[in-house]
Length: 102
Image (cartoon, rainbow, N blue to C red; front, side, top):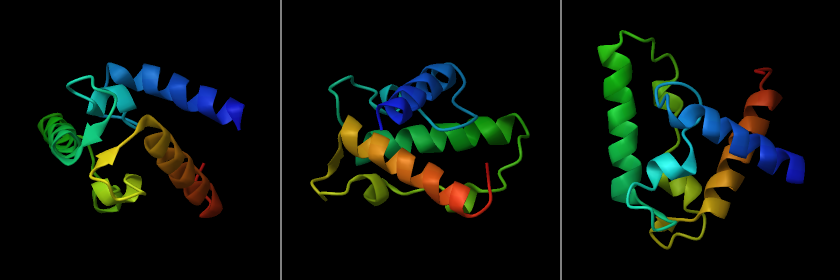
C-alpha cells in the first residue's frame, strides 16, 4: 500500500505543472492551500482543465467519465481530505485496470 502512495505522489508531482494530462495532484485542487478541497475548488480546477484542453484542441474522449466531487468526498462532509483524494484515485486506477486499461 505504501508503494501505491509513493506512486500517486510521483504522479502528482509530474502532473502539477501540466494540468491537462493525467490525474490532477491534490495540491493543484487545493488552491488556497488549507489541506482540504472544497466543491468550489474542485469544480474550478476541473473547469480550467477542460478549458485548457479545448483551447489546445486536445481530445476529451473520457470527459463524461471524470469523477464528480461526491466520488471523493466519501464521508459527505463537503470537503475532500488528501486521504480521501488518494483513496479515490487508487480506486479509479484499480477500476481502470479491471476493465483492461493500463
